[in-house]
Image 1 (spheres, one colour):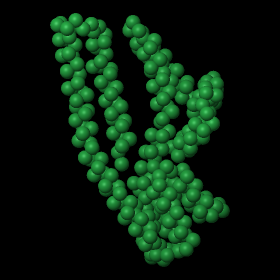
Image 2 (cartoon, rainbow, N blue to C red; image 1 turned 90 degrees about the horizontal axis):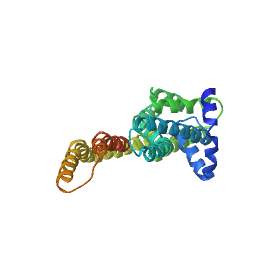
Image 3 (tube, helix red, strand yellow; image 1 turned 120 degrees about the horizontal axis):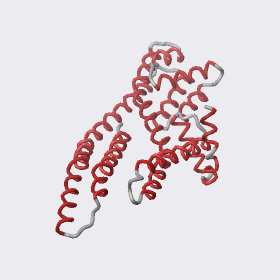
Image 4 (tube, one colour; image 1 turned 90 degrees about the vertical axis):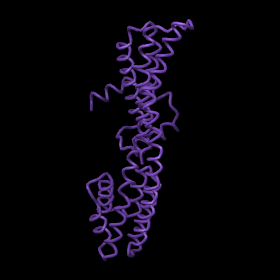
Length: 268
């Protein structure tokens, strides 16, 4: 960790170019993504990684006549990817939590209906999942003196999910007012209906994504190669051998990677 801090310290000047509002948003994204860096350290690290990627690109693309613009593009893309990664990460964390909440709420409601104490019901409903670890953290906070509203409020603040906030509020009500847990079970049924609707919508779009992947993997490169051959022979279109090689082996695979990331992001 000391070596990493010394590495990021060399690029600490970059934080001066970002506004306080941006760094506050980044701090929230980092917290909800579970990334244990301050905004300043994370920006410095991202800048250093982008420079490292640009130097690697410089070595890989040095055979090109105009390799410096490509190196600048690699740097900008790398730094942008580092900046948006916490947002992508926190979305995945929130989806993992949301996936486990219906079963957790239903089990907690059943245990409360059997007359078990709140802490026992919640602990019994936990499992070895990201949600179970978060709820375990809530229970430890309550054992150390935090009230239910503070403990579950902290849980809701760490997760970028409206459903997690609703679930936390209902769990606080169940703790403070008691009851049979019917509200928790209804909330679980409601969220399961939403998840099923999202899955149905995603499966419908997945067919379109698959066709687009096939097109970018085979159809578009083949059409492009045919256009290059015909254009070079009959239309006086000047395409260098390097350009003709890079398009099918670099550009289209890069577009496929972007498509994979997009599809993964949209997965419910």
